[in-house]
Length: 167
Image 1 (cartoon, helix red, strand yellow):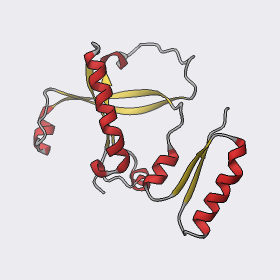
Image 2 (tube, rainbow, N blue to C red):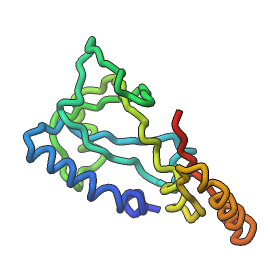
Image 3 (cartoon, rainbow, N blue to C red):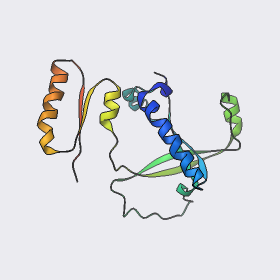
Image 4 (cartoon, helix red, strand yellow):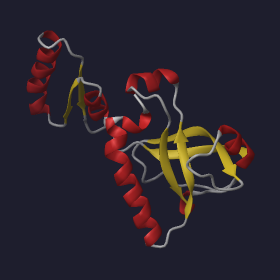
């Protein structure tokens, strides 16, 4: 499946681009774009054949030597990244050679993120045809387990229960 045709991309990109436009209209300056290439095994599990894309705003940039408080983070993570600074913008029909020629420099970077709320594993599984539910109440768990079992036994489908508990 082409990455742009994936149901999660179709659902999320218009929302993401609208949020970016609103932030720019409110006076924030865009920094660039994040391209999530992902490990091949993960991409395959999600049914993706291309990278995921997200926007970055100038206020998210922390220069080398900066300090960050993680006191309000619920589940902080730091991910090693590769930063590619471009010397110029590219058009929609840019070739691989155009892209290479437009690269100004390649730098190491670290992404700080708070994985709260948890990723929507149920939405990801549902997009791939699995039976999937998000369960946030202990009282809802027995029914969800029964429905998941029925999906596996009767419908021969994979099932995922995204059980959310406080930690």
